[in-house]
Image (cartoon, rainbow, N blue to C red):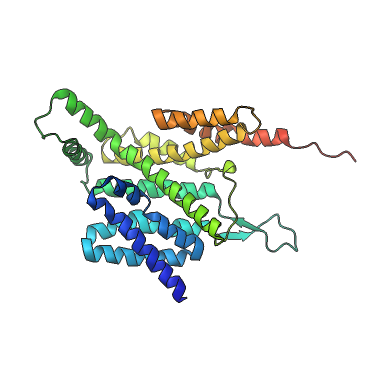
Length: 318
């Protein structure tokens, strides 16, 4: 018990230090900031979700005592809460329905697709919380984003030309969507890294999931359709809807890559296809939407399901 508490506190302190390193302004601090959930996730997967909960609470109180309430709330909402809850869900299991009567050890573990849906929810919550800290209406939030981008680019407010103002306005418009995509990607990366670390150390209590079978819950597509519809309302509602839609599109991009990995299994140039797809997304960005559409199409049409049926051996004749 004492060992578990010490590990929880150590994970919390490491996560807190990585989180507050962003104050230094150094480039490496940005990497540490995005990896801040990792120690708590490792504690959750290796020593139980209670370890992440204790570590997250300790780190939040420490940050609150040193830097104040706003930083404490930011750490608790964006780092501690997702790390604890995702670690808790990842270790959930129930007896498998298809298990034989004597195979009591067979378990159905929490599906990775549902974990991805929760990550999308946390990415949306993180971005929405950050925007609401700038204001409670779309105009004030946009003005704050423009002002921050102007200062970041080293320009003087009111002294920029028209073209520069247009560029700042475009970046301010896409900033919430970009922040949501980055938040979801980093959450997924942290959970994957935590799983790899605990698996290597032999402390991962669940089997490694088959990520090629990644599927989002069936209601996710309905949620995406509603979010896209609300994007046309304007104002703060539209801004929040854009954030939610961006998170869900990014989630479907993950499933789209899972589809690509499945469909290219039997191709001779599999490495070239996958490498080209990943390179196009990294370099250009917009192909991510195409990959997300592939994930949506797979949910509607079932490309992976149809391929599995074709590869299934015929039944033996009696």
